[in-house]
Image (tube, rainbow over the protein chains, first blue to last red):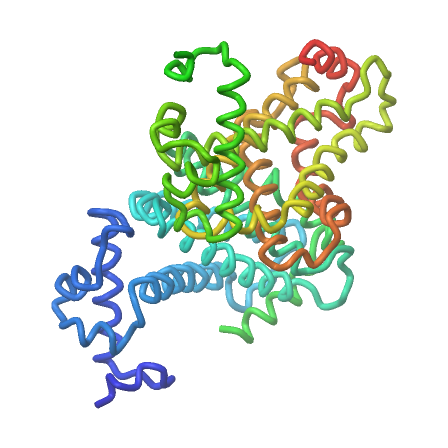
Length: 222
Length: 222
């Protein structure tokens, strides 16, 4: 039975569907009563599968939660890669704009899913979510920076820059959501960029960064 | 009985002592077994008081935890104010140094109390601690910025700058602690400043800020 082998890279359609149903069930339940109150029984019942099926795919609630967060982040990252027009040369004066777009995307995504984000960030689940999102953001930031940097021209370790960037973004986003989104997402993204990115560009030693090299890399990644 | 009136501004020596004992008991227990596993009974026993006495001072464990965090932050803030030499004129070229010192203090404090910080940031207590520390840092940042700014010369709302700064600092600090402090505290503070403060100074429209006005304000606050 293929469902016994969830760790294999080849996942058939049925496994994907079951996992998607479990993720959607968890997210719906988090919205309804918060992560802490949700049980595996609740999730299985909502997804219309048995508890045994749940445990074929996930160790526990936290395992499913972490995978759900990774899934959301991956989808967002895919949208970011799609932002960079394939085969289209980027003018040097547009580099700032390119660095801007992924940030706008993050704030828009949070605004569109504000209820879910807020529900995810409460209680015991909150620290799990924030820690995971920070790790994912740092690893994406590292990947993005490496796209733009051919040489070791940075004056600070890349892991420090990426960790600072991820922590700033997640923390500012959390504050903004908890404060009831007092500024529209695009304006908030713009303010965040002005505050956070100046030091990053300076540390990277790229003003503006070489973007054509990044374009090639991005195309290779697609 | 004065212990029945913990909310009154006038606190006698005995109340202060009992509360300090309860805070110290909680911190020792967090280090030993983590916030989540600590009970009010544990705390009262460790502080050598009865459960009834605990509830005369605090609603619950979380209430005591929040007050303990505030106490730590206040002590740190006092050290920051003490950094600014009273009556001593600050040269314009030393302003960057002045902005630097409180950041160094934060990273040193975290390094000296790394076990406690890490224990505080785990489990259910983690989100409580991080949220509270972010709020406190933002409010101190706001206060510090107002010391240095006589006029409305900033190009971004002060609350956004303060919230960004607090979120960046707390998030970077958390990453650094969780990564096992891969850089010494002073070096980490220096890297954080290079990454985070450039955008802040630009947004504040002060390069360098007027520091003599700030000195007067600080003296008034002392």
